[in-house]
Image (cartoon, rainbow, N blue to C red):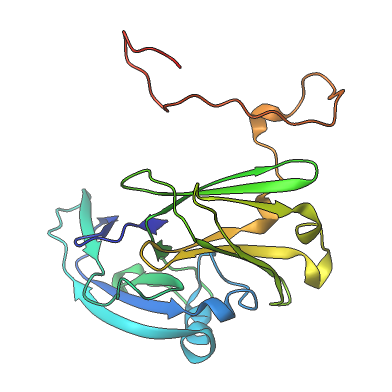
Length: 239
């Protein structure tokens, strides 16, 4: 989940028959994420103890009291602006606990991982190269000099470079083909003005379900066909 860099960014939650929710926010530094195996996972109560003592920093905690009606869903928007600096890089995780949930030490608890970023990314992996394109979420303008870092499972930096004036960076697939501890684990995208986004590099090679099956590929060439816009309305001209 990605929250934009602007005020009043919120995460919506839904509760039923819960009168009090304790919200706790943690920050995990970028230098730790490759070694921390629980990133992007639903945490258990025991995992939160390990997070707080070893991997993350607690940066805020508060209680919220939904206006509940018996057996009816209640939606609440939870904001974190008071705790997060726009220039704070890394990844954040919020936990939502309540005595009314009656969870044990080994039970999973409601968890939300998120980043604060205006970086939009498109990644195209071909036979020899992987193209990374960065744009600003709000303006759709390319992000020039956006930092791209690929880190391995052993926390080694496999690749580090910046995007060009068009927000594009071409990465040789030799940096994406390691195995075991040298396999790429995360792609970290950052900008001095647009925040930080973290992508799971292990999923880059996975094909969308729509691409499975069909005819056998006869040529070792990938062609990407795009239009000038994402959406067209009746009467618009396609260029």
